Amino acid sequence: MLRNLMLTLAYDGADFHGWQNQPGQRTVQSCVETALRRALRHQVVVIGCSRTDAGVHAAAYVANAYTTATTADLPIARSIGSRLPKDMTLLHLETVPLTFHATRSALGKLYRYRVHAAPGRPCEQLTQRFTYHFWQALDVNAMRAAAEHLIGRHDFTSFASAGNERESNVRTIRRIDVYRVGLEVRFDIEGDGFLYKQVRNMVGTLIEVGRGHRPPEWVAQVRDALDRTKAGPTAPARGLCLQWVRYNLRDLPEPAPDVLDKAREAGAPPAHLRALVERQHRSLNEKQRQALAPKPEGVEIVEDPEA
Image (tube, rainbow, N blue to C red):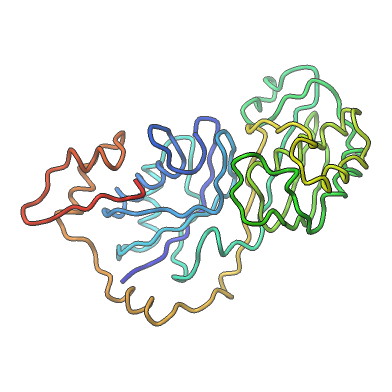
């Protein structure tokens, strides 16, 4: 029987090359998939709620993966958790409906950006990996006034970096809270979805207002220009953290009959394939593993096109 597992993860993104699998790079997805494969003893592809960029952190990142394993959720969670690297942890795991999709089922997300706005570096606070050090004070009230121009449903083309492949750049920003915590200035930005580097570009633009280089009304002009060159610089990745993703599991659509039939027919992989997963070396990518692994007699092993 096919099951859908929802995982909630937290990780320090400083030493990861982002979420998505990339050849020769240490990514969050590759580490999670390695742990899942060894815990479930079959091949698996993990679907993430967001393609967080290199250096971006997460306090509650949500992903899902399908499995034929019959083991209960708690033992699977313990097995996965023990196999994750030290800069990542599994907060929660549960079986959810087959129609749950970590990306498409999301109703909203909250990102937090932290700026250490002081002459001295944030080493005394031990936050240098998680904050952007800005050398001068920032006017919080001015940035709050500027942020009002970004709340609501708008075309955010001016805040989408090169590499954005969305068909539409229209998004809804529900709130932007700008506040101080000690020497830090924090930006909490909640929306229904975000473009590539949108949050970091918005923060970089607001900082231009906070440092006194632009008036708050300038942000509205940038928004309406639909031109990335009109906005402020991109804030560094290390200050950004995905705080949470909101879902409504109760209102997920029912799976179609053919999906249910396929789920009932799905069985655990043969024993020789489970053993193959156990023998795989963690430092090799998928194609290298398949090239080195002995093929059982009479069995054809097909390469994963996504590897």
